[in-house]
Image (cartoon, rainbow, N blue to C red; front, side, top):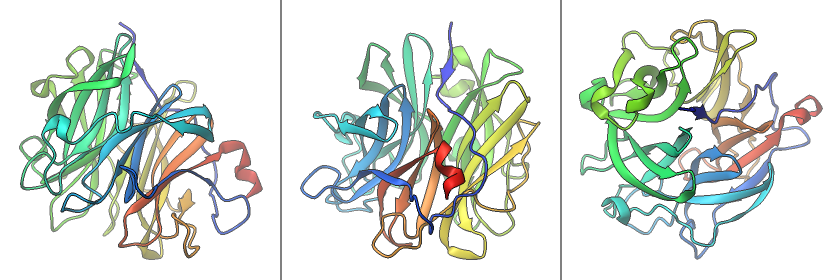
Length: 324
């Protein structure tokens, strides 16, 4: 059985978005469409970028009333929207209620099947949970099999989201599932669960390896969320990308990168990798979050205002970083 988790390559150095060569706005909101209010997070498989979007017309928080569309990448920084978007609807999984939805975070390719790890709010408590949907590699536009994997009963915390999946290099028969979790009075930390690779769709097979009191990553009085994990076989190092408050400016959000020889213990980065642009009217003016790497490009989500909705997905080529 072949297991592939789509991760990408490494990014070195800091990006100053206030200079020249700003990251490109790849996907954004469009009036009169299903994605007229928000664009939020993504997962990439081959040349398909799956992203969350919503119209904000369902009576709840637009950031949560998300459905899933596909953007076909004709190049790392170009492409077109699938004409049948959204390909995953809220109604499909009985999420057509105020404040409920589903948004993509990570994709596992198991050779014959695809498994998409998503954040979803399926119940009236509107607590985010990590769920799994699946599709055939022959038809990556038809998803089914909605299952809740990680919730309060599993982690002990009300808010669980932002999963990133990696085949364990020490135990290839199992998966490492990194995710962010918190309760209402405490900040997000990065936790770690494991599951046998052949039981990825069985909620009972998941085991919590690092809980909130022994997290993979924690920042003093600041959140860490949207983890994205990589492993470099040559160096034997794990790289964990994440988002959180900007150092020195907690009203904005930045992306960070930290490296460790240990899969279950990382130290916070001392500086950001990519910051919000700070440019009025630009859709990453206040937030740059959810970093992911694919085909030598960095992709992230942006907010124009700190209290506004996510509005766009941005990208930048890694070989342009030295020019910034």
